[in-house]
Image (cartoon, rainbow, N blue to C red; front, side):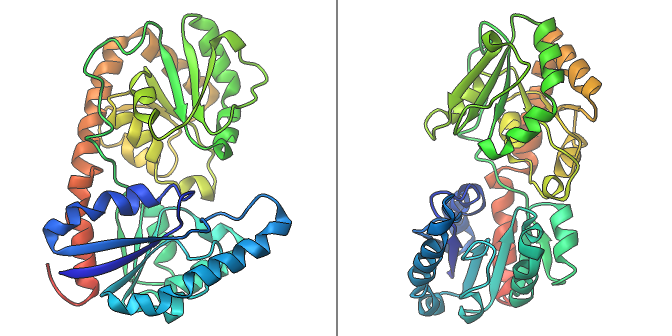
Length: 342
């Protein structure tokens, strides 16, 4: 049995579930025992600046016992850096070391910590091609492993239709509201053409739109318990992005969740979004304001087309992005980094 210690950012780190926790049980079938070691301080610093030094000291002191603990395992697995945007105890931990990355972290603080950590590790797992190309500049041992989806949990509703009125849906952290604001005028035109439709926002706090009609807006606070149902009730899932380094580094997780639940998608064809759109007729890529209006309009007027695209999307996720599809690939990486073959 190969023993892996996986360091994650803790309760406020969105990546810990799809990139670590999803794999703990299925990896056992491949002789891999992965144990998660989450941070009690959390991945992100507090919003109040004067608390950040205390948060950093708490994180460092809390992680110090993990240094000798790492030598009880065969591989040290870092799901992001131990302390956000810093290299701290990683150089002292057990080798081989694996660095798992699903975001363009090098854009922060000049990226020195990302380059150094990449060079300190024996292998890097990247969530998409864009990340892999960047990190291969600092370490030649790079493998692409997309973010996994639990297709047993995120699945289409058994009964149809999903709702008495069409729902255009977006789910994500409020830090992503800027992407929605960029397509606000297009969404407003779609809602004008379809007064029976609703725009549903599922997040940690409500957005503040300037032009959208309030009677066609619906904000629901995200919880672990309601997230699946709220996607299942949607008619279309949207994922707008801008064409920046941060956006190209994203691993399209919300888009994959929509598709797993059988929704057609309309998404900006940026980075991994474009790669997914090429795998089948799962929805539309919207590169302009006119695209957003026209493509949402088409799907709202043609429910059968949306149903077919949603069914194809579900198949694409199951084949390429499900835990079952990706677990054996992760197992092979972990065995290979120790010099052994599964």
